[in-house]
Length: 273
Image (cartoon, rainbow, N blue to C red; front, side, top):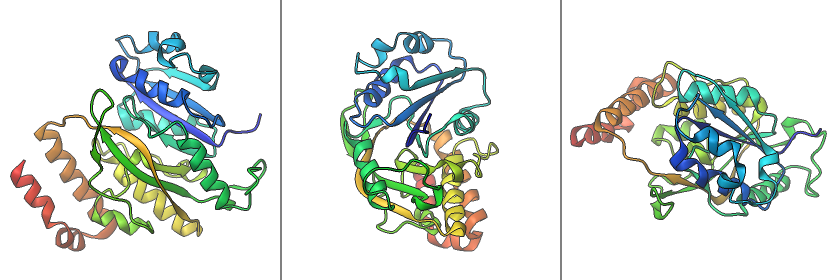
């Protein structure tokens, strides 16, 4: 069996109220060369029941359930679940799509696949047997924010740079994690660091980009809106902890002096929180 182009990884825990939207979005994709890997943390609500009756979650769209593999067991939190997703994924590229998030349109994966083919020597779409180093290391795009009903709120405040490098994140997380598609061979070398509780995805993206630079592999801008991201309320305490954690991560990659000088506005945000 040839590996799919995309592994969509969704990590869940008691996600009954938001998961159906994500399942329906995956099922509606016109491009079907994907697998959907669901890593559940032993949910106690109706999450597993929803997954066992795919017609409910997938809105009876096509044969999406046949693309899906579900694993349910206790974990050490979201980033541990993501590491499990990386280990179990089989696709060329990994996409992390949380419960409640969805692809921007039914043609999102098709458009990204076309972009990938156009940025390799596989313009005819034939990629079987091609080595990973012929493909961009990362493909990325924009993100919209939506509410609990999936309704558009606004475009994400931080816009993606035309040319992304690992140094771009000195300006913050300029590409949303859900709109950052990483080649699996790179992701396997860069697990999420479980010492970070709130911002391990920020650190992971930087490390993947640094790894790509060492390999001489491209980061490719799709110029597409890829994800509708569920904008959830975050408590003041968690916001503060997340920002402090990001500062630590940035200092580790860029140095404390450069981090503090370029991000004095972080301090202003903390003061207003």
